[in-house]
Image (cartoon, rainbow, N blue to C red; front, side, top):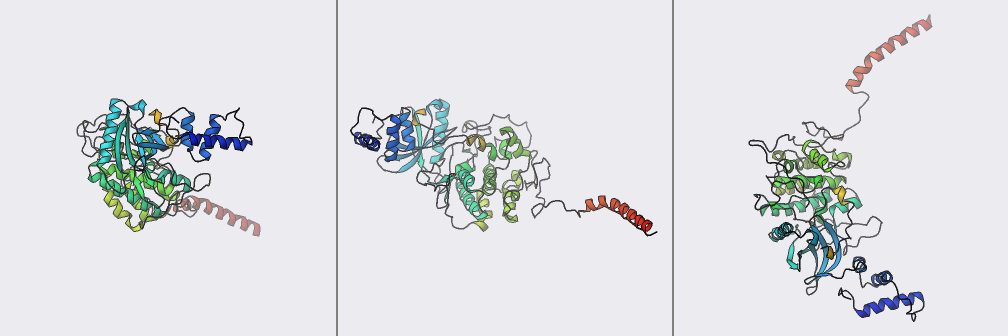
Length: 457
């Protein structure tokens, strides 16, 4: 009862229910175990599974100021996120908490900077901030709670999206990005796990923990000159020149996100973080039509223009992305999602990774348990790289516009899309094949004629 989640009447109710189930409600000699009592309280709806687990582990603090934690949404390198309810307003929100173990002066300063960044933004396609504060030594940020799921989970469960559904979601995210860019901010971590999708098809971009100013320096941006974000979605120019942030970084990452949405694969699956960083700079992704034959040529060209290695050849703004997506965008489409076990999805309680930074690659996120965070426990970055030599171009080694290959990955500097049609297997009447087979065929024909003449004689 120290937690404030239960009163004595509710405990008595659970106790009586256990005794009745055993067939001897008068027997008090063998009290139920804590586990049995917790299971019964969950069955009666007095606790949820996460709350019962925390109580069994001896945790009793479930509030931060007026916000009472209902459930764990997830954890990441930048903090833990909880679903919570305001005790007076009765409004469900998401609360991001800086863990006690990471509450160093530098971490607190970064967390406060994130709060200030989120407070500057107000857009329907960005997760909005409501409040911030401290409870003892714990700093927290309160944002809107977005029911639904993130794009990564959605694609993993339902498979690749149709062109129209993916264009709807991507166009909405681009609108949120355009607002952030107009406010002088670059997101730096656009990826499927940070795109929240509601049951009615609305999309919101979350997690501004790694966002920074477009015209920053080492004093205004502690991550200035560092490569930060998620390796599967880093732009080549972000890798080459992290001291020169531009909106083109986010456009490339959004292109990689769209690639994932329609194929179910990241552009460069497998390998280490270093392998992925090199691949974004030098290699071409697999032609997405090999993963989703329903993709059309105009859509492939749009995708290629968003993922151009050279930022000068890339679509220049999120606003331009919206214009290019317009032919496929209609009214937001309802999203139907079942969980991996085939049961209907409960939208009211589905974890959505609100305002949290995931590990450096999507593969590392697969092992994370989103339900193991606790309030009592209360950056994703790559090594700093040196400043470029004087006069060095920021775009050295860049490739041309269309970054796809029909087969595997290669390092050719010529990355122009090879054909308007999906690649076909080698035909037996290919000119090279004919030239090779002609002498053999001719010799065989002469021998056949000689044999026939000998037989006739």
